Amino acid sequence: EIVITEGRDDWFTFQYINYALFNNKYDIKFYPGAGKDQLWEPIRIYLSWGKNFLVILDGDKGGKKSKEDYLKEFNKFLENKIFTLKDVLNQEIETEDLIRDADKKSIIDEAFGKGSYDSVIDNPSLLKSKLNLAIKQVLANKIKIKFHKNTENNFSKLFEFIVSRLKQQD
Image (cartoon, rainbow, N blue to C red):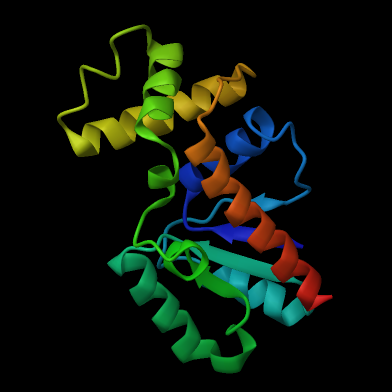
């Protein structure tokens, strides 16, 4: 069983959150996708093998459009296997938006030094890039930060959804 993520940054984020926040409580095997529109191969392989899997996409316009394209191709074979964050959490967000701003600050400052978050706060694309790089670093170095309850609730809902959907496929 795998959960195909939209991209490698989502994979790193889910791996880090499961490790740092939940102490690897969730036995979920995340597969790092190659981008929201490039998940055809793993989907085809898992469908052909008849194996359980889920696809989790961002809840933004791009994620919704990609979901529609995959469903158009595979219809009923994917309808209970592919979800956006909007489907799961009823929010039009990207994966990094599940992390509260104060936690983003802690992660970035831990990886790059105090004040690093403040230097990119006014540039959303640079902030996203810096956060993703920081998550890779704190995960590789096995550094845990203390998360706020909002971040914990967001990921708890998502991970519990994933676990329950995979069980339904058994």
